[in-house]
Amino acid sequence: FATVVAVSSEDCEAPVDRLCLAPYGEGWLSARACQFPQDLVLRLEADSEVTEVCVYGAPEALPLGIEVYVGHGHTYDWLGGGPGGPECSVRGMLSGDLVRVRIVGCTHSRRNLYGQVGVRAVEIWGCPGTPSTPQELVDPAPALPQINRLQHALQDAGIPLELVPSSAFVSDLAVDHETEELVAELRECQGANIHSHEYGKAQRLADQISDLMELGRSLRMLHDQRDHLRQLNMLQAADQVQVNIEDLEQQRLHAGIEHGTCFAARRMALGPGEVDPAARIARAAAARAEHAKNQASQVVKETMHRSQVDLARASVAEDRVRELEEEASKLTKALRDRELEQERLQRQLEDQAKELDAAAQVEVERLQQAREQERLRQELDKAQAAVEELQQAAEASLQNARRAQDALAARESREETPPET
Image (cartoon, rainbow, N blue to C red):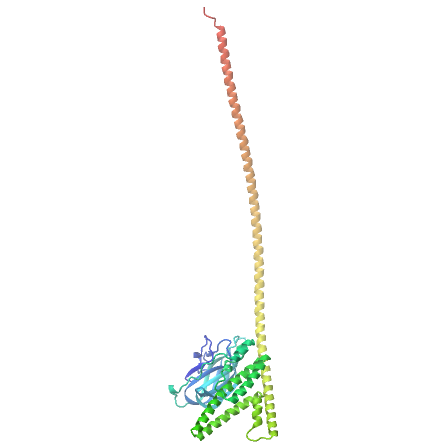
């Protein structure tokens, strides 16, 4: 292929630019928790006849199944489909310059925790034709309309929108009346499945509704084209368009029979021209038998899918239990280490308290000794003051005694000296 025209989503670490022709490339990976189906639209270098398309899935996110369409512009024809895996191959024979690879789901495993799907490479086999000019190229991936009533209903019911692909929300405009009736009946079945929590059936119905919407738009366009050709009196071309219309109506009828709709029962009961009641009953019984067969096949597929999902969930739960056990062991070890650290700190605090008590006791004894020394110093000062007072008193008494002695001596000398005549 020449280039990738459009992609439903991509992972920032594995963009669609890494998609290549060789199966050993790095490849493309869808966004995390993406909606299904995921589409890859590839443009060929020329309008070619495609006979085989090989899709190599990424080992960590294998496709659950693929569908391949070939066409021009907005019109695609179904080339075929098949189960997913490391290598998916679809064979057929269609012409066009655009190839749409639709991936209907992904496999769940420990390596695919985010519900992604990956494609390493795409190989397209066939016979090339004349290269397309830029004027002939039409963007095959128009923008999707805004959210509609079905999305609001799912959100109000608490159903994740990831369970229903985005293509199921395309507007009902430009769809023929009969397809609109069938789609309305299928949507009622889808609502009943959602109400009964059968989301797998609801998702498959959403995929079928998306395909029917594309078929209905093609029918509406072909009806308009046929009427326009008849107005131009181009009856042979109008007959050819009518053949295409009948083929699409047959595909629509098979879709209605697959889900056992009243629309299919009415169409089967009518048949071409006049049909007797026995044939109508036989056709209705065949339709019911086909519907029962399809339902049984769907039940088997759902059971296998649920088993795979349960195994994957059990594996994830086991991994989670092991992780929790490891975390619990780490927490237990950390708690034990913390207890040992607390015991060590407690011993340190006790030792410090003992040291502080000893230091306080020494300080108290020192203070007591200082106080006793101060008391003795005060008593010594008092004794020294008393001694000084006694010394002063003794000196005063000695001086008094000396003065008395001197007075006595003077008096005796006066008495011994005779008086002058």
